[in-house]
Image 1: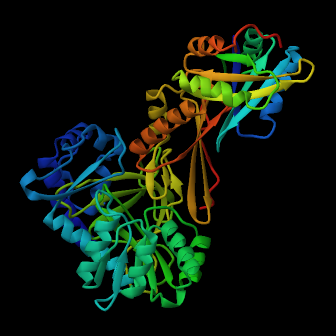
Image 2 (image 1 turned 120 degrees about the vertical axis):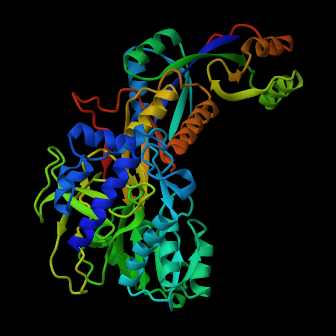
Image 3 (image 1 turned 30 degrees about the horizontal axis):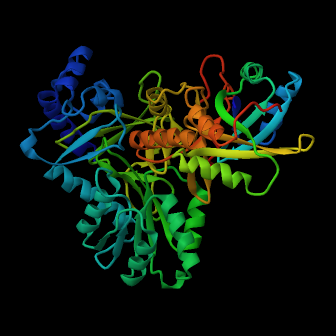
Length: 138
Length: 416
C-alpha cells in the first residue's frame, strides 16, 4: 500500500536528531520506522509515523524543513530472500528504486520494506500483481 | 621629489581633464579647473574617484587614450557588477615593470637571480607585474603561474630559484609541501616577495623560518596598475611608495579631509605618470598610516604601513576581493533567502571560506542526491561570481541570527 513518509532536514550538529524526535514525542506521534541518510555536511531523516500530516505540521511549527513523500509499504513475510525477490520483481518491471529500508515487527512476525520509487502508484501496482499488495496494519 | 611630483601632476591633470569625461564632470561640479592645479600641494582640491565610479563607467569611461594606444588590459577578480578593467599603454607597462623591478632590487635581486613567479598570470595583476619587474632587472624569470605544487617545487629545485613571488598563504603552503617532500636542502631561495592579501608578522616569521628566507611585503591594486605601488626593503618596517609614479595621501574616510603625516586613515593614490587609465585621488578603502622618516636602506620614498583594515565590507580571501553583497546576489538569483553567514578562518596559513545558507522548503527533498545537486549549482554560481570556491554549509531555517539593524554577515576568525 502507499503511505506518506515524512522527511526532515537534519543539520550537521550534535543534537539535531534529538531535537526533531523530541518535537514528535511531545506531539505524541508514534514512530514506526526511521532511517537517516547522511552526507558529509547534512542529513535527511525519513520516518514512517502514525500521523504524518500532524508530524509535518508540528515539525514546521518547530522550524524544521520537512516534506511528505508517497512511498510503498509491503509486508514481506519472514523468510530469507524476500528483499531480493521484491527488488527483482521491480527491476523486471522496469521500475528503479530511489531508496529502500526495512524493519521487522516481532509481534506480527513479519518484516516490512519501505520502497521509494519515482512513481509510487506504478510500483505498488507491480508489487500487487505478484502478491505484495494489500493493506498493512502497523 | 616634490618638484618632479608637481610637474607630473600638472601634466596629468590636463591629460585627465581633456580625455576622461566623467572625471572632467566631477571637476566641473567641484568648480576646479586644470589651471587651479599648479603644485602637488593643490592635490586636495581635486575630487576623489571611487570603485563605484569605475564600475558605473565600465568599461571605457576612465580610459584616457584611444584604444589604438593601449596594449593590454588587466582586471579585478571575476565579479559581475564589481569588475574593473584597467587599460595600459606600452609606457604604462614599462613604468609598472620599473616599479616591480624596484621591489625585486630592494630584496637584493640582481640579474644573477632566478625569480620564481607563482602568482596567477592572466587578468590578475600579480603574475604579469612581477614577471615584468623580473625582466627589467634582468633576472631569469620562471613564469610558473599558480597551482600544481609538485611542478612548482620541481622547477624551484632544478632551476635553483632564488626569489619567490606569490601570495603569503601560497608561500606557507609551499613551505609545508617542500618539507613533506623532504627537499628543503635543495631549495636555494634567499628572499620572497609576498602580496595580494593581508598577512601577520607571525606568518612572516613562520615563512622565513620554514623556507629559510627573508620574506617581504608588496602592495598594489589593479586600479593603480598592480603590485609595485609600494614595496618593502631590507628593514621590513613598512613599504616604500613609488611616489614618483603614485602619490599617496591619507584622508579621513568620513570627511575626505587630508590628514597630517602619521595619522591613521584611508590611503588614496594618484597616478602621476600612467596614461591609459590614470586615476586621480583613487580611494583604496584601505586603512593605513604614512611615515616619512629616515630608512636604514637609504631610500627616501615615503613608507606606508601594512593596511590595517578596510572602510568598506570588502574581504580579501586567498588574495581575491570578495564583497558580501556578491554572495547575496547569487543566493537571491538561485532562489535562496538572503540570509547567510560568511565564516572565515585561517588554518595552516590557508584561508577557509565557508558560506552558511539556510535550508528552505524549495530546496529540500527526501532524496539526498537532489539536495546535493542544488548545492552543487549554488557552489558553481558562487565560484563564477567570486572567482574562488567557498564551501557551502546548509543549516536549519532561522538559525542564522537576524539582528536588528545591520545584520552580521561575516565572522572572520583569521588572525591577521
